[in-house]
Image (cartoon, rainbow, N blue to C red; front, side, top):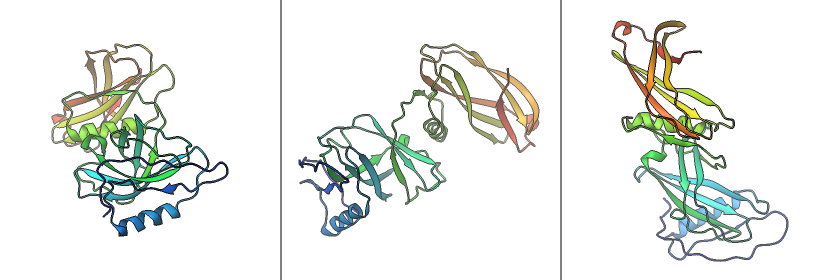
Length: 269
């Protein structure tokens, strides 16, 4: 297991001028790294392809499942000519099926500063809210890290959402491209039948530059293609501009509890 660092102390390096570059691997003074780990870092750094000038890349080296919830050892490489900071840059975690399983917004607390033309290991701690796997799923050892340059809307999740429900909402929200036009979009995130209760999770996305008031959300309870019930869900609060609102709908389905394929559907206008 790679040892952890306390705090990054900066070093400087002068870049070359042209062509492809293999950034020099650096370790800062207070990185408590054993020789064996240092060899592993150098091996990984040497195996990675060279970069063109003015590139920033990240590679996942190891998942530390002993921390709570998890920590990822990553190698950040750059070929920029000046030192720089990242503050507010989203980092996505994908599994082998390219499914989004985590998202962390990098700040200067994670990486105080990037040294120009360097490869630098970093330990990234993830909170529960930054991970999207269900309680039944194990975090995979093989993952991929990507920077996200897409601007996302604000996400509002009401306090009555369970932790598992909030994770599903966040996973769908960050996996879905942000609305580019002025439009309103409703997405059905999840349907679950538990004995005589049916729960549906929805995202209402407001792509407009101003708040909107929908009043109600028209839904249909379906058994396959059969409409069992039509309902109007009251929306008492406005949805702010460029904001996505999570909605939870709970319905008593005692009279249809013998049906196994129940699901909600947004009613067509």
